[in-house]
Length: 307
Image 1 (cartoon, rainbow, N blue to C red):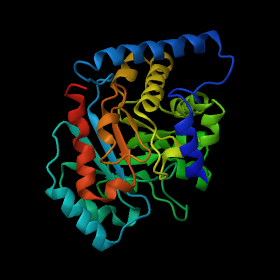
Image 2: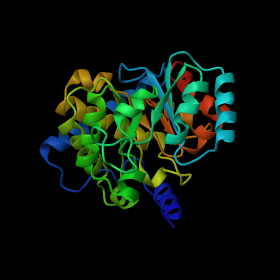
Image 3: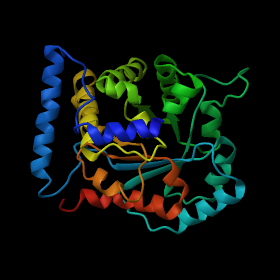
């Protein structure tokens, strides 16, 4: 049902419908006008060389979720070790907790390892949880926080996720901070409202953005086979960068990578990568296939060629 609804929305709505609520304030109108101005400019620029709006290095993460076995992960790691990867990309993979050490001990140093979750503070009597200190102890450098499956299935709220991010960063664990709207929120014109609210919860807790990557993942596109059009993704990414510029600083807006997630695969990554505010990807199912994940990593070349 969700996939069918997503198909209907994607096929019937213009590129930018579903992003705004009615009656924006003057400040919002100014912000949205700035986004449209940037989109017009990037459209003209695309005839020459496609560039990144931000100054950060292209970033591709693979979220393996609750998938894999010792055998299948060994094969995946072998494929990744054998792959030829572009040098100017930061690459991270996030295995299930129990396989992190296996992956860390066998994967090329070219690719860093992330966890998929972490506890909100120091370890202790918290059954089933894993602390930032424990992740660092086994060589884990990153953690994914705020993923829609944690928000909407497990029930984590914005403030809890923001506090998790703050503690992880305080321990020098880098954070992939996820945001994104549900299908009904997009249909109601609340995409910006939802994403900005989630961003504010991170901003209320985070003081240093140097080790933060933001992942925009429209929930209606995760695992459904539906992907936001490059233009839909670009507009939200540009709006998030403008939000950072207004609410944090121009320097943070420029330096922070904003990556896209939601049914990214080897067939659609190049067109998405051409968008100037898409600084990489957070990949789900396709990251479980070594050769396809390598193709997505290497889509950084789309930033360097004529559109």
